Length: 288
Image (cartoon, rainbow, N blue to C red):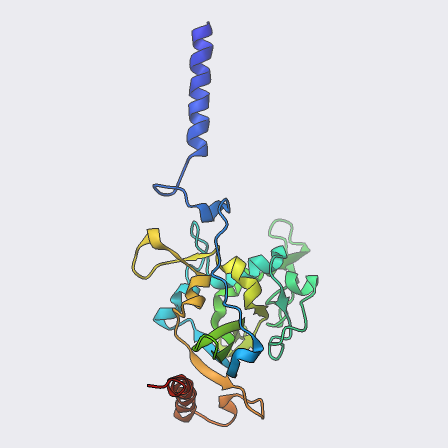
């Protein structure tokens, strides 16, 4: 009898151990369960007296470009990977990241979103109601009943095809380096009518990038080199500039975007001109 009890105990313990140790892979990643805090590469301290030149730049990351598709995929969470908009919205709703409203002009982070705005994030900007009620016919009795449908931003998150990025370029004379610091990012969603026809773009919200780094450093992305053992995070992607973008605005006395005074190919040439000026400035500051 004792042997039988002992055998049953061993079997139960073994099954419990197998249930606890199920892994989708050959080893356990610390980043998945948060047992190991991911270190963030800190920014070098910069004194105002050491900054001899600076300018603010706004650029747009288009997720339809091949290099930027790591921000868009996967469409649904896969194991340890989520697309960027899902990472941001989840953190905002959990309260670990602050979203700033009035996204069209609140790139100075002055208007934190209220709890109700966070709950209906994205729906307000798209002009959608969080709850839709319509009268339908009961298929069994034929009586009229009310059918309630709850909208959720996850149904429209895949329409986020661009990100606005606000950053500052500066030259630190103490270290003799030109550097760039990302200040904020803002997802941009495509608006569509009832027939699914594209009608324009809407900026959703701004997040303060230094605050978001802690969240982004725990969100892994697919490595283009197909090496799952050397995964990158969204913080790595931004910090190492592994993305393609175009400049849409530089600091100016009129506070206007390039599109307000240039069109078509001229706007693209103006963006390249700004990029070249920054490069030439750094080059000219060196003595040979």
